[in-house]
Length: 525
Image (cartoon, rainbow, N blue to C red; front, side, top):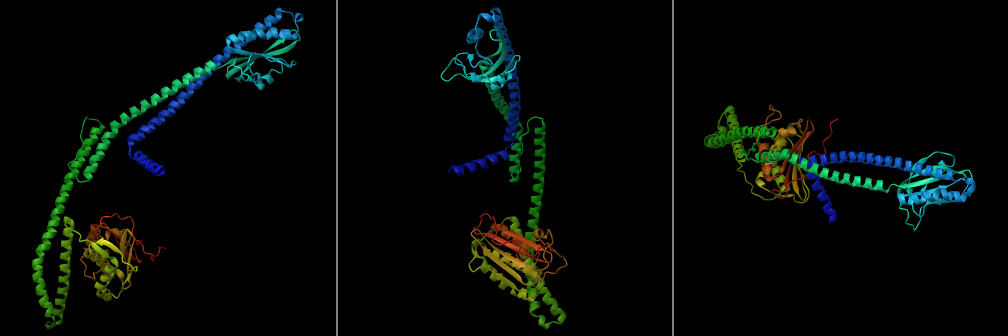
């Protein structure tokens, strides 16, 4: 359960990040501010640290030199012949150890030919770095380095922590040897000061980032809020609520943008209403003309039927004219029926009579309907379908009309080659594809082929008696089912039209059981 929630939360976060300009501005500003504050804070800490250490080094070196000078004066005041070396070493270092206990530093006395060391109580003499001991193996002046002061195990006289060790050599009169005094000064106070400054900088930095985030959020909100309002109004306009407008306040750039947006919306509303009115007039005109032509067409049809029935009594020329009259009357009736159907689509009055339809049966029925036309064009229509039904919820009359239009269109362009109807179905959709091997379609014509009265070659005759509205009506029938009607073609390689219907009316389509590009299509060389 946790593994499922994490990707979902991540997707929601990414979606929010992509859609929210305000969030991106705030996060970007905070990140930049964090970088700047971090760099500035690091520089301040380095300067503070260097200043504290430099001041501390100067102080401890001066104090070490003073202690060494005081020890040399004590040794000079007592001639070396009066004391043994051990006594003189004690006389040298013990007063310094006593003062160090009160002043907060430790002492180590070491000599080149002497195997022992004298040091402050509780101090681990390994606190003196080996590099500094090597430095004083020969005569040298005062030197210092950083170290870590460590106490002996179980002792608490010395506090463990960072420190500075200063080395200085003293000549012991008793044996004439140079001994080295190591002064170990703690940096505990400086470390506490540096920690305090670090905490202050961190607190200040966090508060500053929170303040920057809040200010950025407020400032960006002032800019983003009008943009969001414009987006919502634009969405309402796109949904058809043409009366929506932006509220204008002030005279700044955003206010002028709102004024311009409202002017654009008003112009669009006026033009859309003009187009709607024009479209309504056109639809009414087509509908009225189609209805008004039915009465005279019926009269002409009756007269044409009489002449067609009596054509055997006429001379050959008059008989041929009667046959042509009958053919054109049939085409004219089909055109009127198509115009009425188009007007119903335009008016939104088309409805579905839904039932379970087997597309395999539809394909075979259409083949029988168009057999005579196919034989007239010296071609065959072949059905390739699976051995099981391919069902879809659809209006069987409209689906048959779509397939019939596709097949008759293929017969018009097949040029004596066979036409293949492919049928397939799956759990989500059922499809029919009509493949011909005729002249094909040029680039861009696969989208134009569904336009009303469009013809690829105006000089080409319609042998099937079509009106130029068949594919347009087929596309409207397909959309009424929530399906796809798509075309593919290539010059010289033929064309394929694919009808895809959802298994359930209104269900979304994601893919078709049949490919749009036929498997036998040859790639251009």
